[in-house]
Image (cartoon, rainbow over all chains, first blue to last red; front, side, top):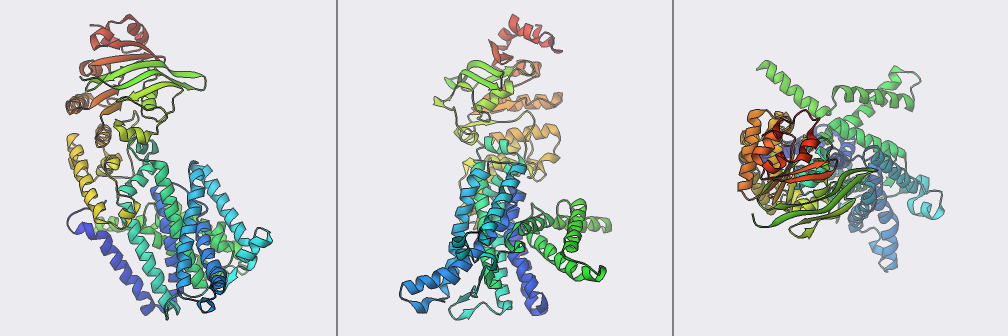
Length: 352
Length: 261
């Protein structure tokens, strides 16, 4: 909890500022990490939503990448197809690539994804444990199927089928473009830090306690006047909105929305889950570190495996990744972040 | 005592074919301490679950201050003014002692997700008040010093006290305690009895399920006895003690000593 007096009350803000300075120095001091750090920032946003949903409210989601994909596809479809078409229809062809459209698309994507989360959440959140896991898994697979076109021509015409939608424009305000990637990096991380701050505020609030009480004991929460169904739905919608924003940012970064499983399919959902788990499910601060750990581990494996094994393929990478995860979960069940903090405390006690 | 605050009419609960509560009717007077006793499996806890809305009713009716509670969700019943504790303590293990009580202030405050995320002045002001009130209720049960500890790190007796503080933080008119003395030692039970008496002095009606008969006899104004889901007796401790049906129901139980004058 946040102490309301003294320096303690600014703890979160101070933490965020220090974090911001470190992150802000990356393009200046370590240019070659800008790409990887941008991906980490984008995934942190999704992971923080997942932490609120899983670590605090105790509701599992194996389909979070679907919300992420809905954001990416909303941005891509609206900016590449719909808004140019609309501009022409309105007799304003010079507005075809107006800088305002991508931002409108991000907002529309957020609202649309929130609505989807709301309507699937109402029936799905009645389920518990494994059943909720299966339902969200199914949801993720169906949505990914829609991205791929579902074998239906009219769906394929909208989502671009297997090739997806290329040509997503860069973000800009007026004539100021958020590009090259060092500039886009700052946009992504400013958003990530904002989401971090909002999430921390939520956790340490009346709403955050209500969410945690659902996890702690749903019956007790109910008898204390908490409408647990309502809060579960709220946090699902919120996590979907986070995922949607991140998806939009990803589409504008890659300039394409394509339905490969690593971005929006089941694999992606599992990756997100792992990021949340490694960071520590009940730790908002853990999310960026979890995202960083997964992305860096995967990169390292991709570099190292071919050197270790002559015929290393994608499968070997998955096996190595799985092994590392199992080890982390055995030795650091509360996540890497919590483990590190404890380790620091332990050594400090030993030296004291 | 000024009138009935809670009333059940032919309350019935069946689990599959088993009748756990069989057409039980009783009234609770405002300001009294009413104990519900009975052998194991008599349906005492089920009765609490029905009143607090945790289980749906099979039949009958519940009225709180004249309002019918049938079919209302637990969180609505709670906000009307009925709080409870649990036989197997249900604290939030992912929170501190203070935060547990702060959850009890949930429907006495109102700021929502957006105000929380942006930490609007309204949210901050309400949060201050939530903390102040929660500390008050912690002091009431003597746990003010332990506010920052994890709730489950408390010894069991204090966990029970914390659960009562959390329930009281909702500012209920009726407090239902489900075996509050179970697992407590003698001095802890005496402290508990004092606390219950203090709560009643504060104007809260107390309904309690209990196994420890000595404890109940000294504390309750009236007693209802359940056996196999059926109400077999009702009256003052003295009346119940001498009721032949009650004595028969408890024969075979190891602890019948309390029934002898």
